[in-house]
Every structure is written in structure tokens, then in C-alpha cells.
Length: 281
Image: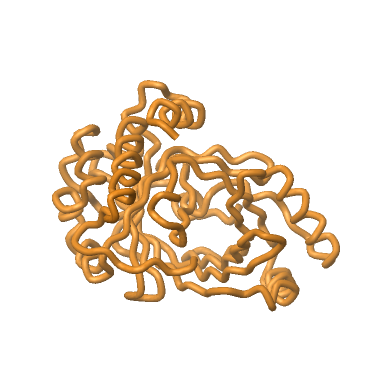
């Protein structure tokens, strides 16, 4: 996929052709592809191994922040597979009982479980929010793995989410330092440094975060992710699955849930939106 095509993808999703995020993410993606083809992965201080595919960290902005436009990244892909466009199914389960019923049905296909801690940052004047950009630092199982992700606005309709994103691995020890020294990301993470230059971002502040327990299962050739997300104001249960054929997969999942007698609904917004707005939608 060439840079011009990537840029068109961003424009169609973000809906703002002039958006600087298109240029930032396109450049970052192209750099990652070039680096991976040369046998090196672009990270902050060191490269760490890929796994299959975890709390607050300061004050929070008000309910209007970004409209909660964010998505989850996929940390179980090789560098060349981390693309600036993510399409995924997002189906909400009503409660723990429904979650357990689905987990039991998928049981033999279980492949991995990750305790994800998610932390979010912006400039003091909401420099990222004003452009519908979200900056997230995520850790996996404590110090097993860590990533930094920039996300564009998500379009979520009828259980299908589409959003732009670029992600980089970082050393877990470095991630721990960034939680107490967020401004270090502006100097040390090329992706963030480039973004800061584009958006006039001089410093970073913590918005806080939340915990998510993700269990991965193989199902009909797909990787289903069952999420139990713990906010200060409540808990959400959700099925997510990345796909190139969202309508077909969504219909298959609906049939699967119906066969189990499990009620469900389409996710109405992102985890980030629920975190910021203190909702459970």
C-alpha cells in the first residue's frame, strides 16, 4: 500500500483532508514498513519480542474530551501488519453471566490472556483532542510488554468500528518511567515527537486510565477477544475482532450468540469514550 493510498484512507475516515494527523500517521507507517523490511523494528530504546495478543495515572479532563473517539490497537501483529486503518467488530455483552457463557463455548480455542493497563495523555490545552487524536500508553501483564499508540477519530456504526492508528513498541521499563515523566515521550519517541511538532505540543499531561482483562480465542479462522473492562464507575463486557470482512463476520457472530441464547447489543462508543464520559455504553 503506497503513501497516497494510505492518505486517502485516513481522509475518508477522519473526514478532514487537511488534518495533520494524516501526514503524521502516514509518515510513521511508511517508516515502520521501511524499517521492518530492513530487518529492524523502530522502538524507543530497545526492541522487545512480540506476544500473541493491561488505575489511574493522574487527573482527568471533562466529559467533552474528544467525544471519546478512540479504538483499541492490536499488539499481536508483526511491524509490517500494523496498518494505519483498523476495522473491527465491537459487540457488547450485557453482564458477566453472558460473558462466562461465551467464554465457556469458546473454551477450547483459548490462546492467551492479558491484563492491560491503559493510560492516556494530551497537551495542557487539549492540543490532541482538538484534532480528534488520542495518545495511549498500554502495558501487558505488568512488565511483559508495552506500546504507545496514536489514534484518529473512530467511526462506529452497527457494531463495526473503523479508525486510523499507528503504534510502536517500547521497553516496559521505559513505559513505567513515562507514567511519571510523560514529557520524556516528546523527546524520546519519534512518533510522538513528530506529532508534537505538527500540533505545537510543548508538554503532556496525564488523563488517567483504566484496566482491561483481554482473553483471546480462535474461532472459525478469526481471533476473538473477550474484554472485561474495569472503570471506576463500572464494568463492561465486550467482544472485539479485527477483520477485513466486517459485515460477514458480524452476522456470523450474531448467529453464534443467538445459538447460545446470549443477548447482546452493538457497542455504541469506545472504551476511551466510556472512560472520559463515565458511561457504560
